[in-house]
Length: 196
Image (cartoon, rainbow, N blue to C red):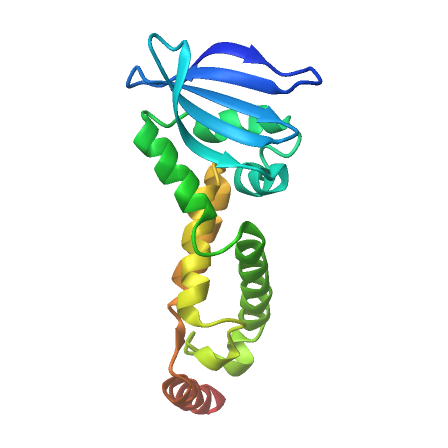
C-alpha cells in the first residue's frame, strides 16, 4: 500500500499529496483550479520528472476517481483512495486507463441500472413466461456484449466486495439471454409440460 509522504488538503492555491509506492517510486498528485496532474518524482522525491496523467477538467477527474465509497471525500482523498493499492507507476496508469476506457462512468452506470431493472422484471416472470430460465436476447436494453463490458468495468471500478458479488451474479444471469427463437422454443415446450 502506498505511503503518504506529504499531504496538504486546504488552501486557495491548490492541494497536493506525495505518495511513495511499494516499488519505491514516488508520485505527486496536484489538484488546482487549472486542473489535476499526477507527476513521477525523481531525485529522492524532490523534483517532478514526468507528468504521468493530467486533466484540465476537475469534472473529468471527479468522474474517474469519485464513486459511492469516495463521494464524501475531498477530491484529493478520492484520488489517493483509488491509487493507494497500486504498487508502481505502471499499475497507476493501468488503473486510470481502465477507468476512463471505452465507456464513461455515467454510461456504465446507466447500462448496469437498466439491465438491473430488466433482470428484476424477468425474474418476476420466470414461472409464467420463462420457466426454462432462458430469455430472448432481443429484450435486453443494450447488446449483450456491451452489457457484459459495462459489468466488467463496474466490477473493476468498485472496491465494495458485496457489490462485486452482486455484479458477478448479474453477469452470470446475462448468460441466460440467448437467441430469441431458441429461448422461445425452450420456454414454450416447458410451459406445455407444466400445464399438463
